[in-house]
Image 1 (tube, rainbow, N blue to C red):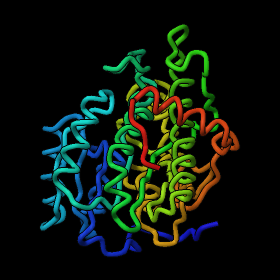
Image 2 (image 1 turned 180 degrees about the vertical axis):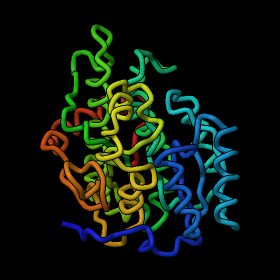
Image 3 (image 1 turned 135 degrees about the vertical axis):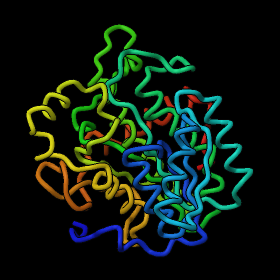
Length: 305
């Protein structure tokens, strides 16, 4: 088990490195982007709302004068937007050291993406799958690069709904969320196996934020009730705390491909970032391969590994 005293102050100098962080206008994405910029990286805030990205960039610059922060429009619910964003990033940068697939949705009302996917699996999995595949050649060309994908504790309850992946018949918000977060880990493990087979120095790892108080929870009514009765503060951590597993997975030199990081405290809800155990289902190689094939078919993105 990884050491339990890791903090962001252990992050090595990131000067000269390029990091793309999705969903970086608030929450864990903003905090991860802020810390990476403070450590010297050029950070690309890849976000759906460009005015919010501009405000986030100004905020980071005010907190860390000299920080190198850029903005990139990216809507993970649109494969056309994903392709345009990837093309723009490839045109602007000749290296890519870190891709943090942080952005996501949790239990929104039923909806479909521009491409007809259920909103959560489309935004949380198919969009990041396509983005990573389109950027992978640049990642492969950058020695020691990493892909870090944000999952959730809820992946443990997740099931892949083979016969109704997009919940066309009976939308269950938490079941759809759990499915998308399980898909994140299936993707992490399958990508790592492919990278190893190709002899690549790029690695694929994952993280989860525990229970972090962020805008991600805006559709979860029971969480708002816990907040009103004062329980949330006892069991959760702020966005900065929730970003620590993501940052450790991205920057700790001792991290190995396929590892998964989360909080060290009770039920992994909060605490210092440590290596944690993914569910047995997420480690099922047959399920990983099935989800990979379905993802390539759905997005039209075929990986070079």
